[in-house]
Image (cartoon, rainbow, N blue to C red; front, side, top):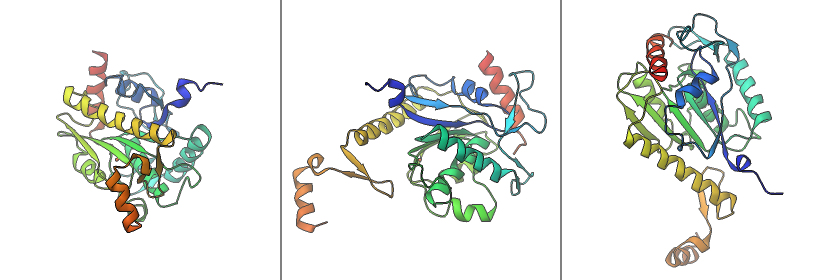
Length: 271
């Protein structure tokens, strides 16, 4: 029986921002050229907990609204984070496997945590290694007990990081990008928002996703082999003759301020 097109697509888990929803993130992403992710299967779940306070998109985008976990004003103490992690690990195991994450704000921060935790063997030990990460206004956790594990080593996942010139999380977003191996950084002049992309940024993102798809297709066809550290081994037949010869010879990717930006963004989406 032939495999359907949907079954061939790489799957991305998309995690929304604080006190919004999966459907709102889907609306946010819809401002991007649809061809960029047309060959991916995007999953937009809602957060674990109902919004524990006012959502800044009330009256602009329909409820219900959710949050993944709660935090103090300094973003150093977290409530229900472990419950959230357990929920997402179960979701990923039962609905997956997934190839990567896309996240905005709280969702991006959480996605990066899961990537770091998996790399250190703390979660999802039986799930295939993730291959990609799209971060929009993400940041690192600030609790040392979390940082010492999640960001202990460079995270070898292909990543793209959207960083806004007017984002109140600009510096934390810059810091998060440094946790990844060779991250692609796409800068935009906007604030804490999923930005509209100009032609240059659209081409950058499209080229990034195209490269990931091409690499993944080669693996599926048996042309390349993934090593445990995320690097790729190319078969000798694909190498230049001198490369093969050399081998023989040598045996050798808060709360404050978010409301205003979300309102502006939704108004722009409605417009």
